[in-house]
Length: 463
Image (tube, rainbow, N blue to C red; front, side, top):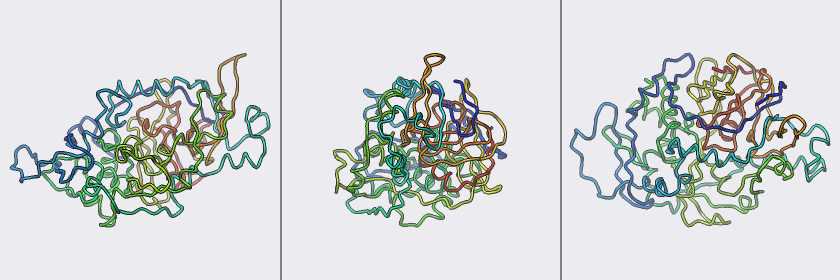
């Protein structure tokens, strides 16, 4: 794809899947490779239903194997989420949690979702510069345009308006997740998996969308957390890692909570995403397509997992659903980030201290990111997107309005390297599995956390 050399620009290419399990290491750190972490020993046993009580929770440590030690007598009730996550694997590939998808399933999913992407090049901009930029746009009044580019989606993700969660009427499964405690000689079940993913998220070692599966992004998150805390980066659970995970978390903080859907939630602007840039340029905003997509981003959850936790729910006003309890703010100054393509990770530093890490998509084989050290030169929430379709005499330019389903998500942070930046994504489940046109792509909620803490002029190292 041809990329225009302007500071506020960003180009995107038709996404192609590149699933890699290459070795990874935090910048300036010595980390084990993925291959050495393949014995992470966090395999799920998969059998029972979501509300089953007395689920056994076992997790092998790296120093003891449950198969060689006598086991205490346990309830015969089997694991409660394995079947839930994989119930449709055999018949419906795109219903499987993304972290557990095969390469073939992910490829098919991306080909299907990207088949209507007609953009040959594009630019992220703060807003329309002239009336010509919005010649195909249905709304031309400046006040209305400002409303279109509002921060309602960001407000929903950041959750700063006093939404209340409770632990009333939780299912047996949710109660079990909340009470789960790691100990040596335990084999993981889904309740423990969800708790580990949540604890990593709360500690700002992001596992991406939480889905109940211990896949690539969860494994990376555990290694990143161990590095953040100065622990051996084995990628395996042990007592010191568990103690560090819970050290700064209130003992009574629940992982799964109940949330009552509000009128404001239901009245959010939702719209089906049209196919093609011309059609997208004529809508008022690239909004969430439905309430489940919005809630998934708000609570850092894979939509399929949200749905499975809330079977038979209609997502109506006054209805109570089960969701993930959100992490608190990072509250750490970020003055340097390192985006490592091999690791598929963005490392955030305060000086020499690693304070956060996020799964990311960084370039591709055909459109690699430039290597070197650059600076953050601009930060834009809810950017507009100038999409170019076709080439030569057939070239057309369409101005795409802001929204969480924009090609650059809800945030653009431009680099001193023209055309490159750090931005959000309309496809959180594809982070670190897809390819990009050289930019650094994060989930919308992770890029908002970086945005809130990073300084203009901060160093960005692309490796």
